[in-house]
Amino acid sequence: MKKFIFLTACIFLTSTAVLAQNSKIEILGTFGDWTAYTYADTDGKVCYMASTPEKSTGKYKIRDDVFLIVTHRLSDKTFDVVNTVAGYTYKQGSKPTIRIDKLNPITLISHADTAWAKDSATDTKLVNQMKKGGKAVLKGTSKRGTLTTDTFSLKGFSKAYAEINKACRRK
Image (cartoon, helix red, strand yellow):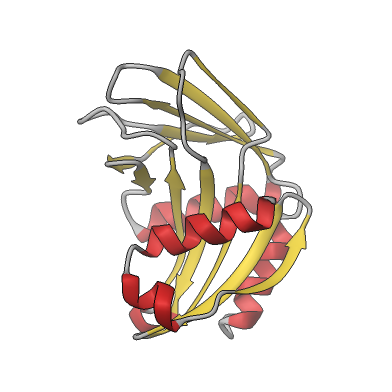
């Protein structure tokens, strides 16, 4: 069931009907709490890894699935792009944060139900922290003002990361 949810979410995340109709998502493997994937879109190969939280807290009644994702997109020459899917629309102007273990939290940029690091240097910093870390804690605020905290296990992160690097021929 978890793999089905990942596949559904990943197709949704790409948000193009062309992708859903013309590409096949391949599961590269599940490593601890992370699953690595690859697919080809009209621009080329994409490799990514995703996980769901092991714990979510907040006073919400309804919430969609939550994901933490790292993506390599060969056609854009972008690597280590960290993004989240909150399972709700973020409050406009809110600044979600992600903290790896007890390190300083990193502020993300939110739009609709997703959040990203501000630049590639921050993405690289986050990925390096996640490779060494045990937990990632994402905090955000929904458009209704609900505060949420999602805790992701980083067990298997490094192995899944190595797999997407291999699939996208990145050293």
